[in-house]
Length: 393
Image (cartoon, rainbow, N blue to C red; front, side, top):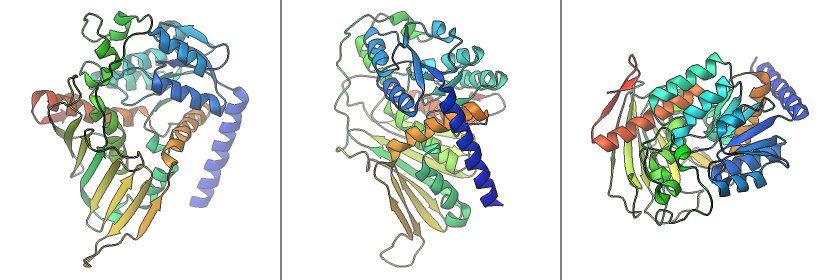
């Protein structure tokens, strides 16, 4: 039966890919900063027509048009882009505080969407986003590409299991690297600052905030959220955890010369499934090659599973002084490929109308964990999740 199911899946996926290639979907990009342009290039490489680009900062808009397909139409108001009925989908790669609002509006406009992580900035808007996506029967792929990466799919299916690990009550994860300082960039063209702020507190134009929005609570959660969006999402996926139970987060003094969120911090997430996950960020350590800068360890009663960005190893329990892994894999370069695999999954689902690898509900569960971490960091308190009232307490 499994082999028949796999053949059926491959035939279906192949047919979807061929149908999509023949249709050559027209997609718009909302937010053409660095990540938006990278995604645009990946989508275009696969064969998608990047027919529209929107950004409120003119230099980003111009750069985005260069990365898009020939003849792409420029916009500085995403709502005007959504009025283009020839577009089947949009890529949303703006600052985090805009993700949910734009996704809701895209769903109401009948567009499918690829939304960068984290899916939303606050839990309430995340629930509204889920409702809009489901009510309008849209495909929403959250950009947590591990869920489509062939390496991570192999790990989840074969090794992140009770058979291989036993019971897991502790997961340790870290992402260690180096950042020198906040960006000191200056504006090089027109910026619609009011539109960029959106629902955030209105304030005078601030170039430091604009170029370093990651590090301000109004817009994101620093690299703590940026990197935990990958790590925590993968933990919740491997451990089959839809929602957290409680989160405690603490951080050191910021060492980047500004911003509100430290580059060195740790969050502990308690899950109803009877385990805790600890994620630690340290971006004032030595420089690492990206192949070596992160690790997640699943501590089971039978074995420990170590999962890096591009490799893994399984360490069975042993009475020997010198332990040895029973399985090892090191696949340099595989994480870059995962982004394209994630995009292909999204494009296939646009045809089949099946849920993608990173559906909106999974994105919400991860975003709630991250929002609780930020609330704990701000208040110095342990934050609990009240599922009945859908709020942090």
